[in-house]
Amino acid sequence: MVGCSALLQFSAYSTVSSASVYANYLGGSSVFGGLTIGIPNVLSGIVLIPITKLDQGRYTGPLRVICAALVVGSGLHALAYRAHFLYLILIGRMISGIGYTGFMYARRYCTDPRLVGIRRRTMLASWLVIGQSFGLSAGPFVCGLLYKIGFSNDIFNGLTSPGWIAAFNLPREEAFELAPSNPTDSAPPTSQSLSNIQMSIVLFICYASGACFFILGSFESAIPVYPASAYKFSPFAAGNFIALGELATFPFLLLNVRYAPRYQDRLTLAVGSIIGGCGLLLAFILVLTLPHVPIGAFYVCWFLVALGFSLASTCTLSLLSKRLPDLGVWNRRMSLAIQYSNFVGRVSGAIFGGAAMDIGMQRYLGALLGLLASGGVVYCMLWKELKYCGSGPLLVSNYFSFPLMDQGTTPLKFPRLVSLLLAGAWGAISLGIAINAYVKQHDDKQQALSEARGPVKVHLNTSDLFASGTVVTVVCGIIMVLCFVFTGVLLLDSNARSSIATRSLPIQFVSLGFLAVWLFASQIAVSNIIVMRSIKVSASIDGISVPDSVLKTVERALGAKTAYKGYDYLKLLAILPWFTVVFTLAAAVVSFMAFSRRTNRSSEKYPPALPSKEVPPQPSSSA
Image (cartoon, rainbow, N blue to C red; front, side, top):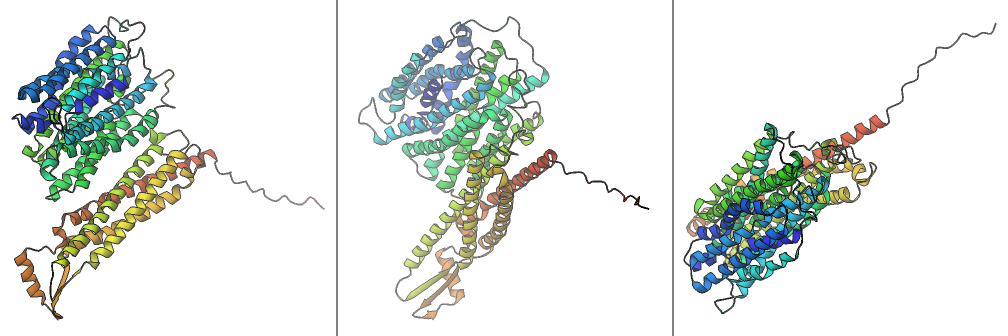
């Protein structure tokens, strides 16, 4: 079933990189291209309930219908080029939408009480998201590559190849036999009604799932549109950009499969939303402050968004299945509710992302941040109710215990892991920004000096920024290395209370706290220099110095930029390392809290000995 879901994702995202170009070729717009990405979910939502009423609790029959619909729809999508008929793309994608009901069956399988126990639901959901990442990366990359190669016929070329690839690849899913041996409906004739709290949880989880897919879908639709304007991306480059972002999330999603069952689903949802929110916030700051966002910074934003919301989407259905009655009827209802939420998010997100340039990137990113913030408020209100408190073989005390109150041997393992990863990631980002600023400033200086010819000698002095920037670069590099080393130690050697990960806690919080203060002081100097100062320019003609007033007049006449704040890459250097300061300080605080908790537990385990009472001297009995 995981393989089926991965191939479905491949089919769904294979048209993303060339959708707008295909629509423009046939006389449509970029918004119409976004509509062709999202419209299959509308048809899938329409036919979802009739198919579930006819499936009789089995999986093989619906899977065959799914494959047939995808073959026909993908073929019509490809034939639109030959017919030169714009709406044949839409018709083909609508028929393919019938096949996308397979997403619901994949999720329903992972929470089917006849097949999967509570312990395995989060793990299987994580594998489904890995398949989703495969589709997000392989689909745009393969079809972008075919667009780059191109073919000189009207049947199979760069625009029609996504349809043909999907049509010939998907029938292999029919080989899977996934129905239970006794496909009887395990649902009782009457179902347990939900309380108000459970209904609130259902509504929130549906909102969270829809929001994750809305943000992912809108970003995937905006990437071929925004970089085409900002960076002159072709569909091949846009497909590679999407694929590289999703490919970078693979190691983290594999770690999630390994460690997610140890922690509550509500924590996974929170961590994923925070990571994705950092990507949205970073993109919003860059678009707000810079007239042209560097491609590397935009890639970091896409990576954080893809990682965060893919991680958050792993636990929505499993979390909901643990908070509702474990009955077959509720499994079907939960699957339908989550799938409809995903459909709504995909359709509206694809259309919204396709119109990102028409809306304006600042308004577009602000709307996504508002959507995330609204869900965060409701999440905080339902924090206690989202905790699973089961009984029987699944004990909360040893399986879903809250990491802050962990009864295990390593204190605050999960918060330390998250804080160290975030601090290390921002240290790496700031290090890259600092190196990029140095290289680009050096190139600009060399270009300016090369334009001075003859007896004119020009000298550009940037030693003030170079000295402070070097300190920031070194500190960010040290933070990155230390955080990743501490993370590796925490993951590999944390089985005992006397492990290196626990014994090195004093070194961790002292070193991270010192580096945070050091970077804070250095970043104040760098930010002040970039905002307040300029490049010191001096010139001479045949050894005679040119007065500063003449240089200023020439600079204004030529439109030359000497202020540091006039360079985009220096603005990034003035902004992004502050995030490294915050997350490094947070990692130091969490490490100190873990050290304090370890000390308290040690004192409870080995209480100090009671002072012995002094015995007064006895009078001598000798005569």
